[in-house]
Image 1 (cartoon, one colour):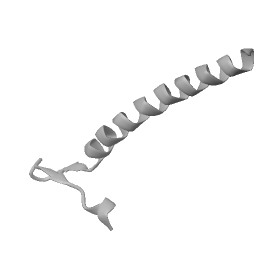
Image 2: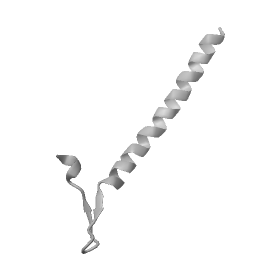
Image 3: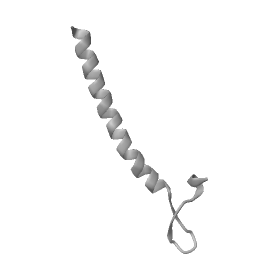
Image 4: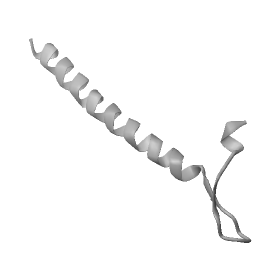
Length: 51
């Protein structure tokens, strides 16, 4: 019976861990796609990731 409880707790812990990681990936990607021009200091989207 103890092993069943451990399995449920492990699944719950993994679900929480995976849920947090998904949200931050999109934010990090959005920040990474932006480029600041060194000449005009304008903010542009990078097209290098679209190749």
